[in-house]
Image 1 (cartoon, helix red, strand yellow):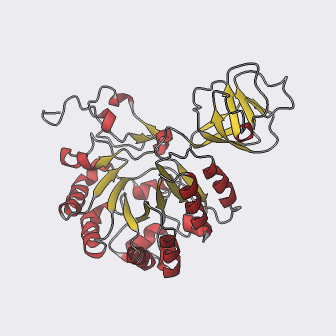
Image 2 (tube, one colour):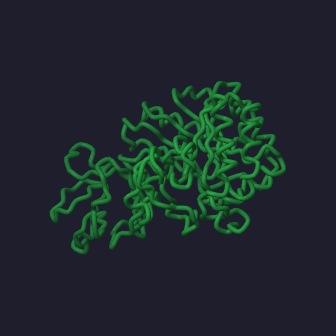
Image 3 (cartoon, rainbow, N blue to C red):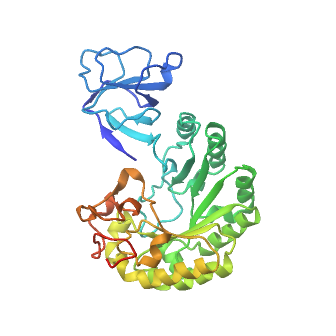
Length: 378
């Protein structure tokens, strides 16, 4: 998530609120955080964020920043006691998500956010957060950690999204293991959401390889979870993170998916984000994305030719062969999506997924500017 460090703050506790820039919220100011460059500010707001010095306002929840251009009307932010401003919801973003928990029952060797073993339940906080979302929000993700680690409280989050954002599609990122419990899968289906998809990773057609990557002997539980969800008519997406330990069997995995999970809504092949445990294990994982193009091509075209919607996430168009570029999607969250100097002037930059800002220069050696369309020679 996007974060800003305040220059000074007077708040003695965390503050969660919706941003307003116009100061016209007369009847419900206590739910809003006013962001303004004005020196004289009205009273009644949950907090004031300003570029002006706060030393003369000791009694107010007053936060000083050096610039307010990052704030937009309708954003939802959390301000910590030490002045860290976290954007938990951005009105202009298409990748807003609820972080259900940092706990997980897997320890994937390429996990960008290593799990914790214990934490305070954050569900009540998340329910209050969702209430501040714009009612016209089109999509909300639920992520972690592993969201099912909060048990039945996951369904409380789904119901609150339905109530606060009735138009929103929901995407849940889960390893699928909990859904091997058919009663739990039934409870998800009973939420009766109009557009909910569970995206579940599968890393190999061979159980031992998948289990090694996730750090748990759960391959068959994940498979059972997929069948249980399908039994209740749930939308399912499969995700495959590509690295040195998965790329060689991409075609075999694609064939396995077609024969065993023909009911899935989509399959996404994902370039790896090299932070967290992925950075720790980089020597065992890193391969230049250009070097697995042949395996990726065979896997993608196999599924596509058999009628399964297939995507490529997090990839750069200049590295992909032209026949795979139509499958690539801009999937990196806006707050950590960057482009390089070499990308300036590339005719495909507006369509390209860009790079993770967290990847610490772990990028393909084949990045280059494309100066013409596919109808001419690059």
